[in-house]
Image (cartoon, rainbow, N blue to C red):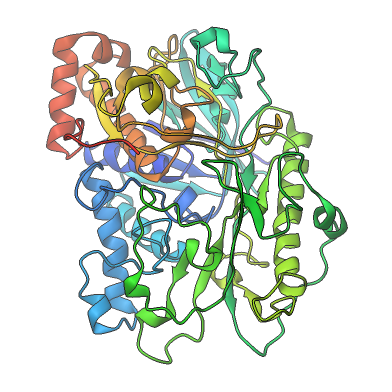
Length: 540
């Protein structure tokens, strides 16, 4: 049942408060524009916070290859730990402090710390009246007039509705749902090979073939204690589930290596005695996913004064809890609801299996001392507030990035394209997780890439911009454009572009197509610290 509808007018509406949405709002507010930012959960930050995913980043992230504002976010997270946590002196002194000493990232950290820093970054604009944030609101309708989106209606948990009329609308949702609501031309799932001649594309289009989602969760371990959760309702199913392309039961420590697909055993040792200062996080040298406890560890007790913490905290986002039985996007509301329920049941089943049946190095079974951490995720059960969604609807853009642009086997290690309309850079392997179409991992070496402005410009609609993983990529290339620093870069550029177009009285298509207008916008990005070109580096 819906309640009354309020009406709001603003310069720029950003729908979705993930990393791209926050970056977009900050960029637009820096330009002096009034912004409304909406978010479906009660936490801004998306991947870093409500989805509880430590950042996946390229190996040069400490030196170059991000925007200046993304570096400020990373520095703010480190400063938070140095200011408020009881770090050992040698840890606090590290310029490249890795708070969790995880192997997936040089900056593994807790979701609440990222939330605190992001809230601090937006605070001045809220105080100035430039930024209005509507958490726990999701988009339910859009009003269009030809090639223009006039307004978007969002609904709160209590059924209250707000219709926001804006001159520019940015879709920073996790699923690209505003594209559907506003009738913006878009792609979903896997394109047919005939469309872009991508070697890894299927013969026929498969819109509901999408990468699996993951409901992450946080754990600590307390030897001698029993924190075993109630047996999940679907545990029997997940305990016996064995995918055709898997070397054993999904709930087991034997899983494919994403790059070779060969069966590889994983190890699991809570609270190892190794010094976290000796951990090196470099996925180009070692994916780091074979030792599960340390893979995405977000708090390392041994970085702190003795006795401050009685356990590490690790974040479970493993091959064992990727969910791919039903599509999360585009299959209808009931299918989405079922997919989320089943993904949550899978993660709870993994938690229960770890506590009761997982093999131990000492020959025993189960780790009952594993304690779910609802205090870390901000939820009653320790599961993340939202599913980690790897693949969204994607705009039909002026420029579509394909496998031919980024795959190292196709372009060579130095073959990346210098884009005349580059608005940022990124680098990550084309990393596709098992999919709802029954595909195993598709993991392809890629080159560092430039982000073309044309991938942010819809072919038809004049005042809607993508601000996340919904830009003009394919099912294949989404695999290297979907991670944290690139999402932030895309959002920041979208927010800056919307503000620039309002200032100059032009539309994004003109900025992208006209050399002089693009040059003016590029200089603006340069002044704001948006790196648009790579130095001479090699892909991995």
